[in-house]
Length: 462
Image (tube, rainbow, N blue to C red; front, top):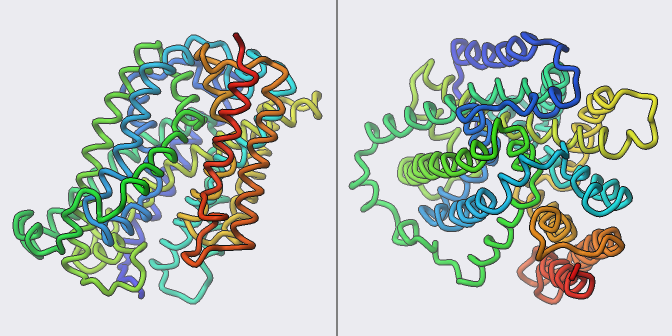
């Protein structure tokens, strides 16, 4: 399906990209001290903290649209509630301690707590875990829809990824924060406009509620308790996600970090309301036979929004995805460059290694979307393989009950990751009738997590 994009709409999209370059170039290459480049000098205020966390943690907007179009308000329970809960736990137990910790990154914190070898090793799974691949893929699909041509989405994805590399390497974390403050405003304004026009086109929320199928009004979406619990395990990603750690470390005070996360949860709840009802309107207006549910929001906007506002909504989609893409690019680049490669290239400045590694991260992301051309698959594979090996070592840095003896951490990361990866490969080679990657009906995440818990019980620090 091709979009009906006007010249004015394209002008708004072009203005958005030019503004990203300008706001990054404004400070240029000035932030050259390591703490400034990586954490904005640990002076991030509450409004900036909330803006960058809210926008960064909501990058999978097309996946959210696909879910809400197909399964309705269960989006709140399955894609929302687990992350609200674990974000709140992160704020209570970890945020303040991370701010007071002198480490600038997770691998550095692991190295300081355990040993250099464990810290250096942890940089590799973290680098891959925060790959920007899912967001590169979404941008490729979105631009392919907008352009309406025969060019493959990979071409558009590559161009946008390399554009992100350009403006992030110029301004560092400060550039990420400045652009996120713009992008969180665009996120909310775009979806508010979409809902207003959808209500005018179809009718108010009451009529919408009565018009959609019963399953769309069911908070569970017809899913089993076992399936819903899987998403709570996936939400453990919060504890090992470097973007959470980076923002907590960059906050002006520990209280700023704690309070900022709770304020962010409120914004996520509000945005989930907007996106859930936008998905319901997409189902009601476009009908149940949409060929590409992942494009539910773009197709709905293309059909009901007038010239100009249509461009503004697509800019809001771009902003939602780009805010996560630029953050993950930056974090994965700093993890590979500063926490791993610097050991092997000691004469090269860490900031330069970070900038080069940002490019490597973008190229790896492009490679991953060739292997796994699905956003859901990318989230599933990356989370299932790498979270089990990182979870307990990261928690152990800040919470004494999870602390392991230093000699066990290095091997725990390797063994747990290998167990999950092996289970994933076996599930790929010998799939079940239902498909997926479960070997003998067991998802790869669980053997890895079971191994991690076993090693922790055996090797914990008494």
